[in-house]
Length: 355
Image (cartoon, rainbow, N blue to C red):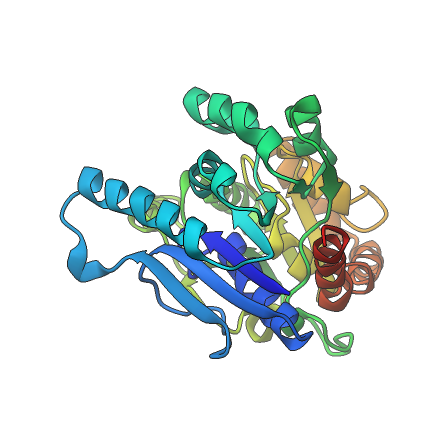
């Protein structure tokens, strides 16, 4: 089977990593895979050499946004009309819209992956997605909430969560855990690390043995560093930046906090659970954390942007270490439910079902 993935790029995010991992898996299963991207990009997630990467516009050809996008549209149309492909798998809103506009020019089957909260998209993007949704043969959602937003506008809808990266599927950690609270993700408004830093700063004097580590890069780094300094916790908060081997860095930490305002199916939370950390997460739309965590069973869910609830949750797991350990042990079971072999196998079965 000839399978082509279409996405903006292949670095820097959960969708990009999913495309690389799915391509590698499907290629290993005897299929011929390619990845079509909007622009040239670095291979950040180990895409195998045998997976061909094709680009709509190269860096040296770019002039301005209008010119570049016109070139992309014409080349995408040409690509679709000439490419011999059995299945296209398309990720992210802009590329989904672009591809579905030209769906009539190919006989190939089309699978679309919706990975975020569509209610947060620009109204024009929302309108176009709903108008074009019927053209895709299958829509794959990460949560039931996202699926519900599209309603009857899609032909066939399936919910498949993210797979946990192999790096985070390992034997249970047996040693003494460091007294560290961890956050991870892009340093942007969505992740709301301000909430985590402020909550930590408020309780830090009561728990001087605990530090905070936030892994990731982004446009808010300077603002967050200023906040850390202004709150007087510069000696307690570390922001090492993006770490490729995050599992090695956090596997012996105690607590993981997802402080986001919104998420799809958050990889960072899933990975922390798989490592057996005690996890606290906001109940952010579109319901990804809520589908992973049951409060009191395998973690704690708190309202979005509620600093008092976050402080209460942190105090609770710090002061009740045995309960925290039990939550972590239960959370770790997720690595069986969301293993790469299981999740990627479900994707491949969808492809086979369309042939």
